[in-house]
Length: 148
Image (cartoon, rainbow, N blue to C red; front, top):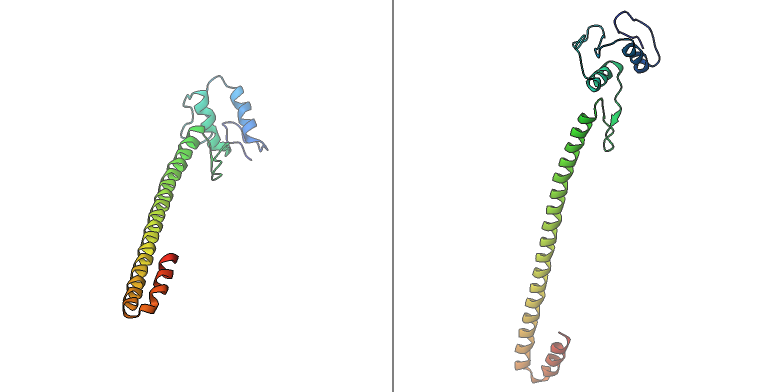
């Protein structure tokens, strides 16, 4: 990779290490990269290190969830918070779906119970009517009531 530091055009294997050498040779915390918009600005050590990553391509902060990488820890933290917010929204939606499904199932059970109860009443009415018409069906009626 070619170094674009002022007065340097070396081809180097490890640009990060090479730039650290340039920094150790100067007294100020300034970027001396050719055509850089922050060229000659005095920066804090942390800001300069983060800025130089734009030149080296180094992105040491990786998201454990989606593997996206960042040049600064604060950018990663902001990104992770988005995941957490999205996860919370998704979890709330899933919880709501489970709740509604449970309510629907309870209503279905109630409906089935009501249908069975109604069928029982209809059968009772039919047997009672038949028993009143035929005295021999009285035993069947008693048997049916014992099963229910």
